[in-house]
Amino acid sequence: MRGKRKSPVRLATMSFLSWLLFGCAVVLLTGCQDGVRRKTATDPTGIVPSEKTEAQLLAEINEKFENPSAHYELARVYHKSRQWTKAEYHYNVALGFDPAFRAAQAGLVKAFLDQSQAAKAEQYANAYLRQAASNSERETLRLGWEFEKLELDDYALRCFQRALEIAPDSFEAHRQIGFFYLGNGDSDNAKKYLSRSFELNPRQADVAGALGRLGVVVQAPGPPQVEGESQE
Image (tube, rainbow, N blue to C red; front, side, top):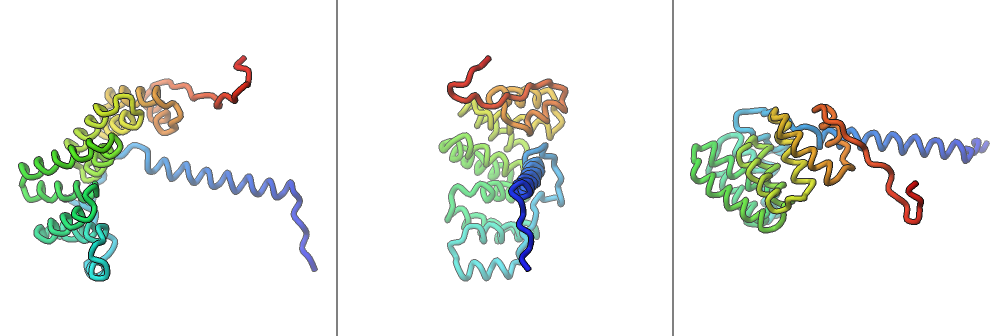
């Protein structure tokens, strides 16, 4: 026997529900990624170990030595276990194959700091910041975010401020520095930068939500105007 054919109305309803559920999932995932980034260090080094083992990563490198991601992951393994010579070597190899590998740059700076080599960390951090800033404010923000993930707040803030100097009207730069201050409990600066970000781009639900929680009243933008449509 043939099953009953679904009516067009039922198909449309099921399609709408599927779309709605998908949209909710996207919102939840976006909220997790773009909400307030509070620091949750899992260990004194601030380095989360690779999900792969040393043996697995060595096998990957043996198969394809010019794999920057594998070298970076292996550097994190050695960083976690405080095997400094090996960690530095693999951070540097990763950067040799990908000079703009921001996570590896931040990791190497962190390795120097963890060895109490503050002057060397400063030297490398400044070089990486100059390199990122010579490309774009987005690359500078990326470097800052990698520093922030390792709880290197001074370097992160320096990157965010440099990005703002490069692009004073960048809503992304204002947004990033605003969330940085919010995560560090500085409500006044958070309001300042998030408000400016929202002025530059009012279609940011996470920024609007953060401002609302800070007591700032924001107005959501209306639907985009269709060409030829009356504005009355």
